[in-house]
Image 1 (cartoon, helix red, strand yellow):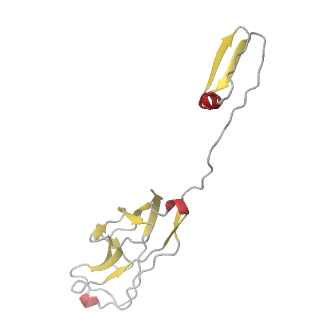
Image 2 (cartoon, one colour; image 1 turned 135 degrees about the vertical axis):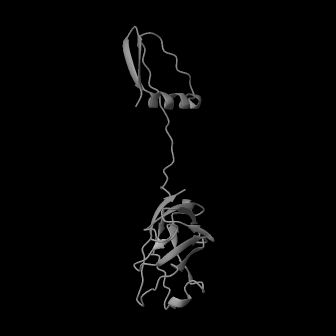
Image 3 (tube, helix red, strand yellow; image 1 turned 45 degrees about the horizontal axis):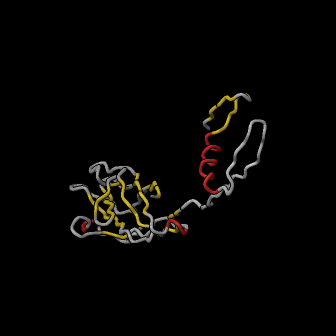
Length: 178
């Protein structure tokens, strides 16, 4: 709050800048001019208007789960194992045409830092947003109409023998509504 003080023959007067701004904005709307003579007082109405709005919000409403089902180890680098990462966004009325900036956090693969690690050494994930690869810690834009194309592709380190077992990975999305 900014205050200023003005002195006249009646003593110091202190007002806030907020009050002065409202007064200045409201002056043209007054119907009668205000003229005071020494020793007189008058009342003046100040009309204040505004609009209440709800903050725009968007939520990714379900966890993003990607299931590869059965993967043949020998075919991981020969055949493209790529799955769509479907997501659903629900937004307040004012945020329907907005975008969401997303940072994808996760552990980088031990053999390729541009890929996300899994629980199996030598197996990693490539993340793509609209066919552009996103590295761990990288970011992209998602559209609130759910039209962004997020995909995940499996990748195997050359020369590594992978065990026959279930694999998993975790990627954390940190979001910001534009």
